[in-house]
Picture 1 (cartoon, rainbow, N blue to C red):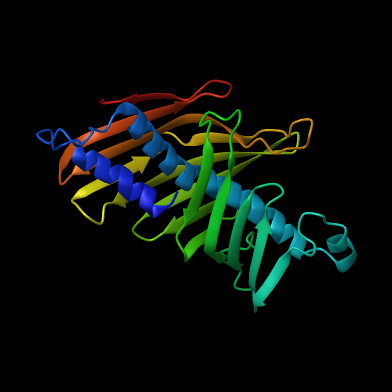
Picture 2: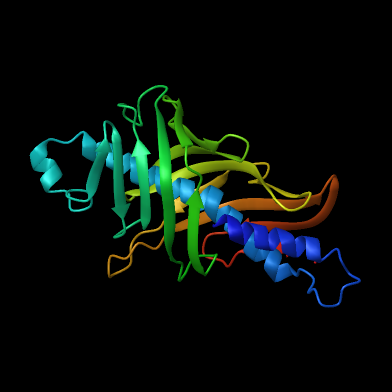
Amino acid sequence: MKRLFTAFVICAGLASCQINDSSIRPVDSHQLFNYSSGLFGNYVVVPVELMELLLAFDSYMDKDLDDKEADVRFYGKIEEVSDNVYRFNDSAERKIHCTVDTQGKSIRDKDAVWIIAHLSSWGYNEEDALTSYYDYALPEYTEIRMTDVEDSIWTIAYEGLFETVLKYKGQDAGRYIWEVAAAGKDKSSKSDLMATFTTGDTPLEVKERKMNEDKVYLGNAYKGSFNVDIYSGAELKDWCHMTFRPGFTTKYATNR
């Protein structure tokens, strides 16, 4: 989600407080849902997609030359920018473009830290609960840290903005299963408005969905909740609570 989009929606929240100005349209529940969906996309969807991509990339880098040449996903599509720094565009499957500094380590190594730059993720969710076109991004110098080798836990974070913790739970018919806990904040640069977000009391369960008959990647199924609160100073102004259930449209509640 672009920062301009964030600023627009937060400013819309500010406009809703100026009830004496009839030329300003108050924020409504649909805008709150769209804004919350954007935060969910940036700090839950993208970390999951990125983690799955980087695990595959890490495995590719460990292959011998013959096996690399047989890998249609990565072979010939990776640019080595400098020592341990790679740029690639996974447009065929995950629809992620990014640059990654591996610092000479496997993402599976104890205390490994990979650094991300120029990350963007785009596409269209035809059947997903979010049901929309998406275009997300993470800040440059976002870190991916192996925090628990034994339990397969990684943390994706940018200091002062967000932290997403992903626990690998195995696979079902080759599809990844994760537990995801995310929390962070989004501050307006033009006012005292600030949004906080969290996945709630328990982690989200995220399960990769199998590809359709045309081998098109369909994204993930989600189970759990994602909550957004918008404050003006210390005062709670707006909120949106999203509930995910596999096979069902996202249920959301707002104060509007």
